[in-house]
Image (cartoon, rainbow, N blue to C red; front, side):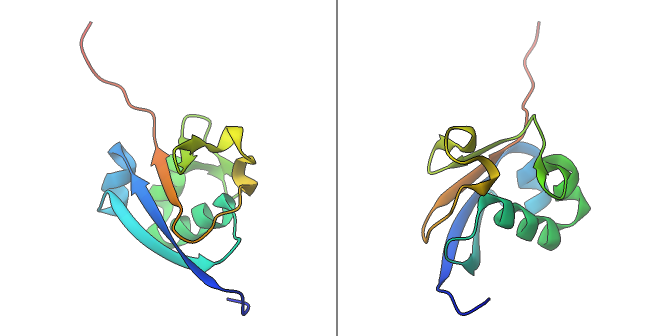
Length: 102
């Protein structure tokens, strides 16, 4: 932390991401104004390669099959991985989901 205000972000995890995190809801603290990219890097460091393999192509690129929503809005419609976060934001990480019968 560089002296800026600390914020808490609520991370909602679904399907296989929930299994990696061990919960469907986690509260993460980091610097006010950090981006979705910073949040995902923080989660990759905390939860290791299992998280990174499912969510990121590499350290800076979101997997094309994963959706990230900030307060219910897909980051594709915001500022992508550079979307700034603020205290109390809810970030949902949704992997591809398949199921059902033909």
